[in-house]
Image (cartoon, rainbow, N blue to C red):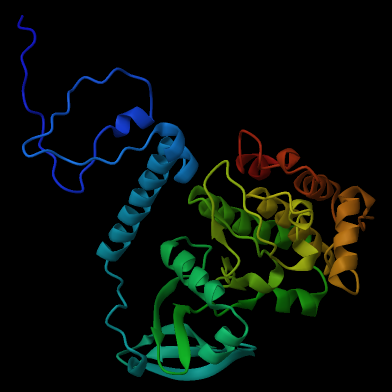
Amino acid sequence: MKFNIEEEIRCLGKGDYFGERALLNEDKRTANVIAAHPGVECLALNRESFKELIGDLRELQDKQHEYNDEAYKTQQTEIEKNEFDDLSLDDLEVIVTLGIGGFGRVDLVRNRKDENQTFALKCLKKVQIVSMEQQHHVINEKEVMMSCRHPFICRLYRTFKDKKYVYMLMEACLGGEVWTYLRDRNQFDDQTTRFYTACVIEALEYLHSKNIIYRDLKPENLMLDERGYVKLVDFGFSTQLKSGKKTWTFCGTPEYVAPEIILNKGHDRAVDFWAIGILMFELFTGMPPFRASDPMQIYTIILKGIDMIDFPRTIPKNAQHLIKRLCRDNPTERLGYQKAGIADIKKHK
């Protein structure tokens, strides 16, 4: 064996740095740093100052890895060529307007080049988006929907824009809104509620596997395809959140807001499990369990807990038990949040 053999590892130039490993641990350095002629000027930063000014290096490295992972996913999405990338607005013919809202309208359109292809075209007024400060809402919806491929989530194929509108070309859900059927029938039976809830659970399981929280579950956001299967729509409130992390954004429909959101304790995917319970109650009865004339009153009732609510006989006993397990005040006690995850909800009988 040979010892004390010196070799040049690398030559640093202007703007380079060394010694970053010293920011991580106390290991003894295994290399010398020699200044070449005519000398060099170095700026030094110790570990304490680095942490105070910039933060912990390991956390920064973890964030960089997360960024690299997301960049890779984005690259892969771009590589997977969308079958409608070549489609333009001029290729679309309006058949009928499906609905009109505060930000614009939704049209049923077809491809002039292939009349068997129909879509829903969401037309959003730019001036309305800006005046209501909904830019982030719209961008968020686009990013989440473009990243999702699931049979119970409405597909977003591509987007367009012109001087007045932003357009979202989406899968046409020709079965209509679950909310419309619920309004007309007043309530659903056990079999129908079970089926719609099962579709929602499958969609949420997929979203959670991608670290996406939905945060806006309600009958108005459940569309039906031509076969009667549920499709989740409207992802403006959804957010991506790493496991173990929390977010403090106050959002959602008042009747469906979980206690931890009201109390600003920070929340995670557990709010979606809470919302499943509220949805089940509304599908069975036609109304959510927590309701009042204004949001503040609703929040007060929510904080009193699900055990204070009288369950009508139209809700079967096993469904009542499931709703109460989903709507626990403590997020960690909710069914779906334990070790087995959402499988616990699927197995409930």
